[in-house]
Length: 413
Ligand SMILES: Cc1cc2nc3c(=O)[nH]c(=O)nc-3n(C[C@H](O)[C@H](O)[C@H](O)COP(=O)(O)OP(=O)(O)OC[C@H]3O[C@@H](n4cnc5c(N)ncnc54)[C@H](O)[C@@H]3O)c2cc1C
Image 1 (cartoon, helix red, strand yellow):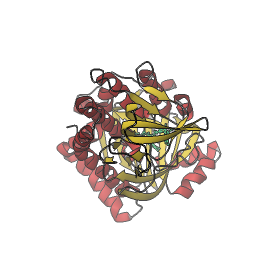
Image 2: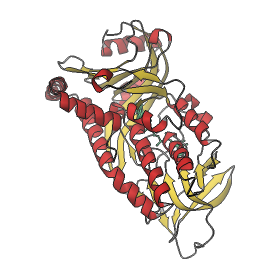
Image 3: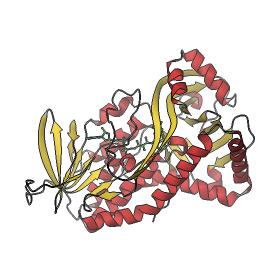
Image 4: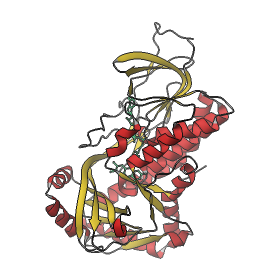
């Protein structure tokens, strides 16, 4: 989304269609609409939600997402996916080198460290919570670059080939990130314009995702295994005997593309060789798809003379190594809903939102970028350093606790 300032010809002072218009009904935009519709009841804010797709289009999204315990406490009053599987323990290790650490829910006195659910079921649950509120939802509607005026924003939208303009006091960019799924048909998004200052990094990696079944499952245990090629994450998804796992296998793009095309048996054998035998043989795989990875984080969450806010992947697209993207985005949306409910649809609300989110963003983006670089580079001295880091975590419980808490709850101010 590339905002431009109003020219002399732009008609100003026209009536507003909405107080707050949210572009993007992904999980973050939906959560924001849901919270806002509930919290702004006394302010009577009028809310519009615009998306090029509709929630059912997300049903085939191949991603499974680890939603942290902290995110659960934020969203469960709004919605909760029907297929959420608890993660009770996380086992972190590296292949071919020393060093491993265990993170267990009992150490933090929590019901779970997080939950694994399909992207589509998270979207469906949140969509259900938004339907029936007074948020005005425009499906199959594409938003184009907004125009900033002195008192608001004009958003050109196109629906069924017909273009019209929405006037809104505040515009929220929740349209997702720069990197689109390489083999996901419905992910037609090409990513926001790069005009605003931002921090970017190409990790030279692609994530191959899919659902695999193992012969000797350890239900409710998640695995993060670092290999010379990149991290392998296996997230418990339940299924018969708890044997289904969501796989996120990061590696060089050409490797990921080759693996995406392998026959099932060859793929399972290659995965077994890379992950090891901790859960026995890999017996089945389905739903393989590839996502190119990178960091793409806006310097400032608020632009357009204080009238445009960015949340979720539109604000920061992260490497999935630490499972932080959606969790951070939900905290963005929650803080923005608070600020708009408190200060009304005004630049003051957006300034309060930006100030409140600065520290958490810095910490989460920095930690994820460091992990992604430290654990995705094939360089022998770094492998030793990784081993030391994992071992040190085992012997320094306060450090491990601080890291685990950051990953589960972020920094909420
Ligand atoms: C392989 C992989 C694994 C991941 N695992 C995790 C994990 O374990 N934990 C975690 O927290 N995060 C994870 N993530 C990150 C997570 O998927 C994202 O952070 C999250 O989906 C961002 O949600 P969003 O609502 O901001 O954007 P999106 O989910 O991208 O939604 C954006 C919406 O905007 C709409 N849109 C876009 N442009 C327009 C337009 N111009 N007009 C109208 N509509 C528009 C799209 O149709 C879409 O519905 C992972 C990501 C990947 C790739």
